[in-house]
Length: 238
Length: 224
Image 1 (tube, chains in turn cyan, orange):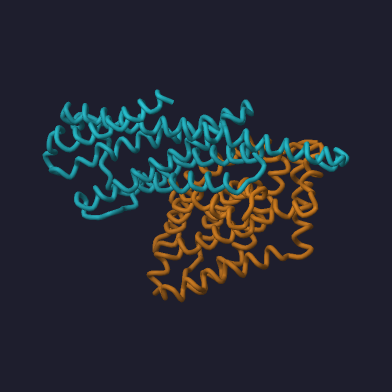
Image 2: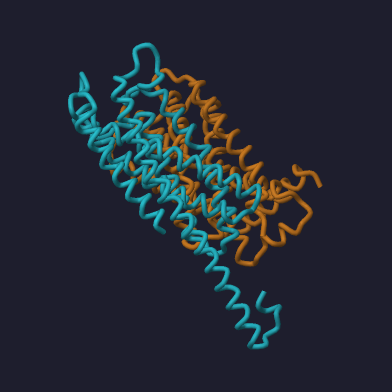
């Protein structure tokens, strides 16, 4: 417990520090001025989103391969964290887009892809909420999760052929790309801060999910026993 | 029994079941026509506008009809627990899925055969000279709708509120298919119609990706 309090305090301090760096220490962008500073949290939210959805995909496959109930719990927890981070990205994006592009939203490849991805993982969570039987929920939602993940590159490709509004890759993007090294350092601190919030939330969510599974099992066992004690034939129970 | 033969027998069973009542088919066709008619009230398009918006309208109508039509595919098996009987039969899970996909494809294709001429008349779009290419685009798009939709029908059949859940699962996944199908159809409805090979290839790729995925994952859909 004390480690977790210390960890949370550290994550909170790092988030505040990252905010300070992003607002005061990072240099002003030549073309965009001050407004670009939202980018430190915008990019960090996306990095966390993709890590979370990657975890969902891997745990879906791992569940179908091993049938370990814990993989299912991990997939569900990562999907929730991913949707939360994705929402941060989808909110900070238009806030940045309005002053810089002059519009809140445009249907370009990356924006559309992330929006559809957000919808897909919300569907994944809704599907899980609407199924009773834990084993069936696990395998069917894993199949849906894999279909959803396969769809993301297809959405991107299908939008790629339209003219694009979102800027191309800034890092490793070619000879003209790249940023001031101070910006890179601030960005790394911001990513670390967001990850340090996201990972403990994911771990806690995972623990709750596992506990819920255990409670469910115990409840079923109690029901079986109480039926047994009423000396009903076991066949009816099953 | 080979998968192909088992799928053919199951296809026969699905068709027999449907053509005894034709409930599903009638409802689907009427629904699609209602969508097309309502669209014309909502936007009142001129001939030029309908050339522009028509492909999108047509594919939205197919997507919505598909999402309504595919729900009974597996839900129908539940009322008498007939899916258990199918699973006990000595056929592969993929044969069961494939039989249903083929049947659903035929139902959607029949609905399209009725809807496309109605659309062409109501929106003044000339189909002369593009029928062959249009059939290709319609077939590739419909395969994509049916493959993902049948798999999701198997998934949603086990959930509460399944009638509502199926469109929620299906429609976002089909977003890239909708874009590609609309673009390919727009190219055919243009003043100088042509077959846009990029989008046709994309549609074929979409079908291959999800057909392969359903082949790989079908055992998990059918297990008890």
